[in-house]
Amino acid sequence: MTNILYDALFSPHAGQDMPFLIRDDGIVLSFDDVIKRAAQLAHVLTGVGVSPGDRIVVQAGKFSDTIALYAASVQTGAVYLPLNTAYTKAELRYFIADAGPRLVICDPKDAATLTPVAEEVGAVLMTLGGDGGSLQQAANKQPTAFDTVARGPDDLAALLYTSGTTGRSKGAMMSHRNLLSNAQELVQLWRITDQDRLIHALPIFHTHGLFVAMNTSLLAGAQVRLMSGFDLDVLIEEMPRSTLLMGVPTFYTRLLGDARFDRQRAANMRLFISGSAPLLAETHQAFEARSGHRILERYGMTETNMITSNPYDGDRVAGTVGFAVPGTEVKITDPETGTALPAGSIGMIETRGPNVFQGYWNMPEKTAEELREDGFFITGDLAVMASDGRVSIVGRAKDLIISGGYNIYPKEIEDVLNADPTVLESAVFGVPHPDSGESVVAAIVAEPGQTVDDQALQTHAAAHLAKFKLPRRFVVMDALPRNTMGKVQKNVLRGRFST
Ligand code: MCA
Ligand code: AMP
Image (cartoon, rainbow, N blue to C red; front, side):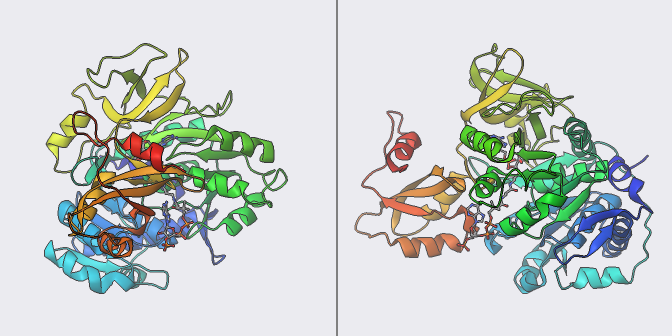
C-alpha cells in the first residue's frame, strides 16, 4: 500500500533543488529543503506518539515550517486539522474537545492559554512560531529522511471545521483521494506548471489557501511566494515576477482601489483566480478594463473542494462560476423534494464525485442530512444551470454571511448575543459592503426594563467569538420582523439596514 497524497504532492520533489517557497524575509527554500524539513517534523510527530489516523490540531502562523508540518502530517498518516488564528480560547476549546487530537500545535504566545485545554483531552502541546518553538527545536535534531506511512485513498488526511446554520461547527473529513483528485483536475484545468510562480496571500487554515493553492502548486512544481499575511503593497510589488494569483473578491476590489495596479503591472501575470465568495460582475469588468485580464471565477466548499470553474480557454463570464470540474457531477434540484430540475430553473446545487468528503466527524445524523445515500452532497447554495452546463449562483438557502471570504454563521453570533442579560432576542444578518462583500449587522430586542449598551455587548461577544465575526453595527428594535409562521424575516432587515 502507498500513501497517494504524499506520493503525488511531495515524494517527486525529493532531491530537487529548484526554488519552491519564497518567504517575506527573502529566504528561498528549495523543494528538497521542504521535504527534508517535513521528514524532521515527521520524526517529532511520531516521537510524541502520533499514530496514523490521529488528529493534529494546528493554530499557527503562515511560515515555511507550517507548510512542512502539513507535509509531515500527510507523511505520518495523521489527520491535519488547521484552525483560524483569529479564534478565541472558547472557540478553540470546542474544536479540540470535539476532534480529540493527539497533538496540539500553537504559537508560543498562546501556549499558556492552550496548555490546560490540550490537557483536558490528553493531548501533547508543542509550539511553532516565526522565531521558533518547541516543535521546531525538537525537529532540528532529527534525521532528514522519514519512511512514509502507508495510507489508503479513503483514509483521512485532513479535518476542516465548517460552521452550521444550526448547532455547532462540523468537522468535514477529507480523504487522501478527496484532496488529490481535486488538485489533479485543477492543475489541468488552470494549466498550472513548473513555470508558474504563485503569489500566495491567503491564509493556510482553509481549503482555499491550503488545498486549492498549495496542493496544486506542489503537484505542478510551481514556485510559491509565501506571504505571511495579506499586504497590498507586497502583492503589487511581486506581480511583475509572478504568473498566478488566487484570491477572494476582496483582493480584487483592493487591487482596483490602488492606482499602481495597471496593465503594465499585470503584464507578466498569466491567471487571476477568484473564489470563496461571489465576485461582483462590475468588479470582473472593471478588472478587465484596468489590467486586460479576465478573472477566472470558480466555486467550491470545504466539504467538496472545487465544484465548478470558468474555463481557461473560452468564455470566463462575469457573474457565473462556470462548469462542473471534470470528474465531478453537478445538478440543480428542487430544494424541497431533491428532484433534478431542467436547465434554466433555480434550485439547490448538489454535487457528487471523488472530491466529496467522507462525512462530518462524529456526526452521522448531520452527515445523513447533507450527504445523500447516492453520494450527492447538498451544498445549500442556490443556482441556475444553463443548457450548456454553465452555473450561475443566485443565492443561498443557508443562513450564512461571507465577509472577506470568511464564513460567518448568524446562529452562532445570535446565541452569544442572546446570552447577554440585556438581550431578549437578536437577529444577525449581512449587508453589502464595498471591501468585504458583506458586513455583519445585529438587530437587538432588549429585555424588558433593560438598556442595550453596544460597547458592553461587543465586549461580551468578543470574549467568545473571533474578531471577524463581530457585528460591525448594532440596531435596537422594539420587535424583530416575523412572517406568519413566526420566522424572523432577515430579508426585511437586510432591505431596511443596507445603506
Ligand atoms: C480581517 N478582519 C476581518 C476580516 N479579516 N473582518 C471581517 N471580515 C474579514 N474577512 C478584521 C480583523 O479582525 C481586524 O480587526 C481587521 O479586520 C484587520 O485585520 P487584518 O488581518 O489586517 O485584515 P486583512 O489582512 O486586511 O484581511 C482581510 C483579508 C482576509 C485579506 C480579506 O480576511 C483574508 O485573507 N480573507 C480570506 C479568507 C479565506 O481564505 N477564505 C477561504 C475559505 P481589528 O482592526 O478590529 O483588529 S475556504 C472557502 O471559502 C471555500 C472552500 C472556497 O470556495 O474557497
Ligand atoms: P466554506 O464553507 O468556507 O467552504 O464556504 C463555502 C461557501 O462559499 C459556498 O457554499 C458558497 O456559498 C461560497 N462560495 C464559494 N465560492 C463562491 C463563488 N465563487 N461565488 C459565490 N459563493 C461562493
